[in-house]
Structure formats: C-alpha cells, structure tokens
Image (cartoon, rainbow, N blue to C red):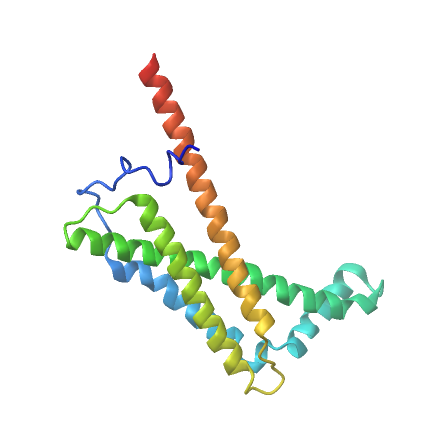
Length: 188
C-alpha cells in the first residue's frame, strides 16, 4: 500500500522563510462571522419572521402556484443554510487556525509538515464549530419563537466536516498533480 505522496510527504515541509501574516489579521474574519452568528441567533431571524420573506419571494416568482409549499421551502432553506453557512464559517476558522499554527511553528523555530498543519487546523475548526453551534442552540432555547435543536448542531458540524474534507481533497489533488508534473520533468 502506497502512502499519499502529496498530503503527508515529509519532503513538503514549510520553508523556514515563509512569510506569515500577523495572526490577528487571520482572526478578524472569524470575529465578523461570530457577529453574524449572533445576529442570526436573534428572534428577528426566527422561522416565523423568515416565513414572511419566503412568502413575498414566492408570490413574486410563482404567484399563487403551490402556496402550500412555502412552509417546507422555508424550513428546508433554513436547514441547508445551517449546513453550508456553518461550513463556510468552519473554513474561515480553519484558515485562522492554520495561520496561528504556522506562526507558532515559526516562533519556535520548528518545521511542521504542511499536511499536518492542514489536518490539525481542520480538526480545530470542526471543534470550534461544534462548540459555537452548541452555544448558539443553547442560547436559542431561551428565546421566544426560537428552539434549540441538537439536529442543527449536527448539521452545522457535518457541514464543517464536509467542506473541510472537500478543501483537503482539493489540496491533495493540486499537490498530487504538481508532484506528478515535477516527476515527469525529472524523468525527461
């Protein structure tokens, strides 16, 4: 069984002279996302209020055709929003964790494999989203017109896992193509 030459290859270490942007810049988008999560966790963004938006949009696009589907569309759109919204926030967390781990490794004058940094930052982003999503749903349990749902925590976390795996797969694909291209050049 061959190991992956692209993701975990020890020869693909981070160069010691790689410039790392200041860590606070990597965490600023995370703070913006946290503000957005706080805003959407209010009563204003409850299913009751978003149903008005769906109703108006439905009437604009379809008139009175199948008005009985508006509630289902609202519910499903909210759940899809949980999956991809928290998944995107998870990618932003992954980026911030990656910059933090790189900066920490450079401060300690250590060389970490890029693949290990990617995997560790992805794992930390999943844990971050699990914690934030759990706190968000617990908060919503105490608001009128909102319900805290463990299913939403699972959706949020699985969205983060899915998009992180998609990103890691893309990075693996890029590196394997680059590795194959460099190998072809060496053979010639």
